[in-house]
Image (tube, rainbow, N blue to C red; front, side, top):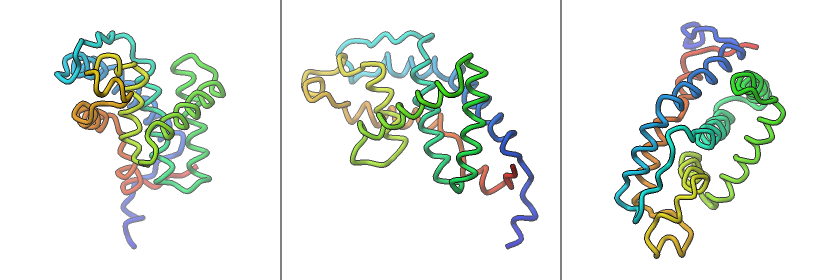
Length: 180
């Protein structure tokens, strides 16, 4: 009951700024490690040779997943307002129209839900999103390649990597009072 008095105030605009800066920096700094892990994974028959500069798809998967997770922590009105601010700020950072970015993220979210069906676990959807966006199926053994499904051992490793790119919405909700 008294936790509301202990929470620090954070505006939706500040939260959107923090989210965009955190995610973009994390992806820019962490993608090289992701590439190393994928390129050196022993489950692949041949090396995928993903380029360390090819992080656009990864960034979109990470943003799409994290925005989806945000909706689980805030009421729909606040969620929509924060998301719109994120699109504006991220669009500005990436030199993309916010509406174009919003449509692209929505397509990614829908696609990730489909490839992850029937599971509703967003982290798994993000891992499968990375797997399919980087066309990693072609580097697997015949068995998994013919099934067009990620090797579960590789997918488990990728799930652990993706966990490092999840924004801690719970921490934000517990420690901050979000105002408009």
